[in-house]
Image (cartoon, rainbow over all chains, first blue to last red; front, side, top):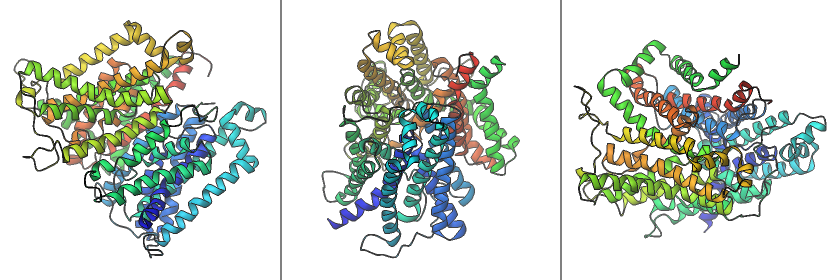
Length: 291
Length: 348
C-alpha cells in the first residue's frame, strides 16, 4: 500500500510538470500538442549534458532550456506565423523523437538508449523515494502553487488569461497578445522539459527511445480533466500517475491480467477521463484560435 | 510573385526543403552529401530490388496517409493511424492463421477484416467525439498505446503461435498471401516483397479522390471540415459525420495493416509498423490531403524509408535523420494555410 503511494507520487511528477505547462499554454490560447516532444527534448538533453558535465543539476537545467527552445519554436509558429497549432505540434513531436534517436547515434554512437549517467541525488531518503525525487515532487507542488498564484493573482497572469479568452481585448488594452502567447508557450516548454528531465535523470539514469510513452498527451488529458486550472491539472496528473503506479504494483499479483494488458491502464484512464466530462467543461474561448 | 508563393508553399517547396535538410543532416554527421545522397538513391532507386523495396514502403505509408487525409479533410485530427493500422493487421492476422479456403475468398475477407479492425478503432474515437465531445487528438493517441498493449498481450498469450519462438500469430496459409506484383515484360518481382497491395493502395486513392470530388457524401465531409458552422446549419448531421469520418479513416489505415499482414509478413506481430502511422501524417500533409498527390508524397517518403537504411549502412548517416526531416517538413507545412491565403490575395 505504501509502495503504491510512493510510486504514485513518482509516476505523477513528469505528468504534473507537463500538465502545468499545458495549463499556461492553453490559458494563453495555444493548444500545445508538442508537450510530448518537449518532454522528449528535456529527457534527452538532460542525459547529454549530465554526461558532458558530470552534473545532473546542469542536466536538469539543460532539459528545461531545450524544452523551452521547442516551446519557442511552437510559440513563434503559432503566433507570428499563424500556423495551425495542432499540425505544428505534431511536427515538433516528430522532430524531437527523431532528433533524440539521431542524437543517440551521433553523440553516444549507440542506437536505442544512452549509456548510464549520474543520477540526480540517488541517496535514499525514504524506502522507495530518493532525495532527488523528493526535491522534484516538492518543486512540482511549488510550481502548481506558483502558477495558480500567477494566473489568478498577478496582472500578467490575468493578461495571459485574457489572451486565451479574448485576444482582441488585450490588443485594445494596449498590449501585444502574440508576445504574451509566445512567452506562455516558452514557459510551457520549459515545464515539459523539466518533466522529461525527471524521467531520464531522476527516475532512472539514461535516455531510451520512446521513454516519454505518450505522457505529454496524458498531460493534455489532465489539463482538460483539471478544467484548465493549475490545481485541477495537478490533481488529474496524480490521478493518471496512480494508474501508472497501479500497473507496476499489480504486476504478477493478478494472474489472469497479464502485464501487457495492464500497460494500457493509464491510457484507458485518460480516455475515460476526457470522455466522462460531457457538457461540463469549457475551454478558454480563444484556445487554439490563431490571432 | 503569387505564383512563386504558391509553389513554395506547396509540395514542390516541401520536396526542395527535404533535400536541403537531408544535406544538412548529412553534414552534421560528417558525411559528404554527395556520398549520402548517392547511398540513399542507390538503396532506393538503383535497380530492381531497391525499387521494389521502395514501393513496399510506399504502400505501407500510403494506406495510413490516405486515412489521415480523409479525417483531416473532415476537420478531424486523427493522429491514431498507427493504432488503427495495428488493429487492422491484428484482426486479419488472427483470422488468417486459421482460415483455409481458396485465395479469391480468403484474401478479400482478410482485407475486409483489416478495414473492420481499423474502422472499429477509429470509430471508438469518433463515437467519443460525437457523443461526449472528447478531443479526437487525445483519444486517437491514447488508442495507439492501448492497441499496442492489446496486440502485445494477444500475440504473447491467446494468439501466440505454439511453433514460433517470438510473440507472433501462426503464419497465414499460403492461400491468404497476396500475389506478387505482375511481371512487366522481362521484369519479374516474384523474388521481392512487392505484391499487388500497391495497386490496391492506388485504387483506394482513386476511389477516395472520386468520393471527395464527385459525391454528395464527399462534399458534406469537406464542408464539415472547412466550414463546420455552415455545414451544421445546412442540415449536415455533424455528430454522425464525425463518427463516419473517423471510422472510415481508421478503416483505410486498417486496410493497410491487413495489406502488410497478407502481403509482407504473412503473420501478425507488433513489429508490423516502425511508426508508419506517424510518418503518414507528414505524407498526408505533403500531399496536401489530396489522395492523388498523397500517392506521390508516399513515393517520396518511400524513397527516404527504403534508402535510409542503405544510407546508414553505406554512408554512415543515422537513418533517424530521416524522421527529423519529416518532422521539420510538417512544421514548415503547418505554415501553409498562411501562405495559401496570401497567395490567393485574401486578407490575413
